[in-house]
Length: 197
Ligand code: GDP
Image (tube, rainbow, N blue to C red):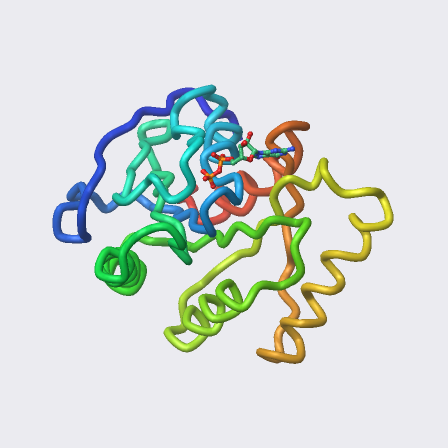
């Protein structure tokens, strides 16, 4: 799929303030610093569409980016939020969960995982939550340029093994690197499958 236009539309504090639209939406979420902004910029083919933040956990709103005038990338606040108050953590959790559970035109949630790390409790909890609410999701490994060849083969297998024993499923994992510009077509192919022909 070619990306011809990518436009920032809105930052919303909750689902009720999100743009009124029926166009298909594709949500991206992950722990702070996972590489979400870099991945969104790579997908959109724009350098500065999503901010690549120096401060982890800066994004605290639901950000809509209109692509090709026909679908949205939705940049959600991170999960985990280590550096903010408990009260703000709860607000963000409710905001994110509200959007994910109630947004009718949401097609799939992409959960970003730093490919260098072992499966993290917080990500597994979030996966468990998505499964319980029967939400469709895909897994994306980020920063795979930082892995050796051996690790690149081993890490997805380890993750799948963990998923199999925890949830009884073995999902596909898309391997990406914003630095090396890899994995872009694979994600866009998944998205294209949900778009009207
Ligand atoms: P966010 O907080 O999840 O939006 O993450 P950012 O996109 O701001 O990236 C966090 C840090 O990881 C930045 O220093 C990026 O330059 C770096 N980074 C992001 N993607 C990649 C990647 O694919 N490879 C490498 N080596 N670094 C990356």
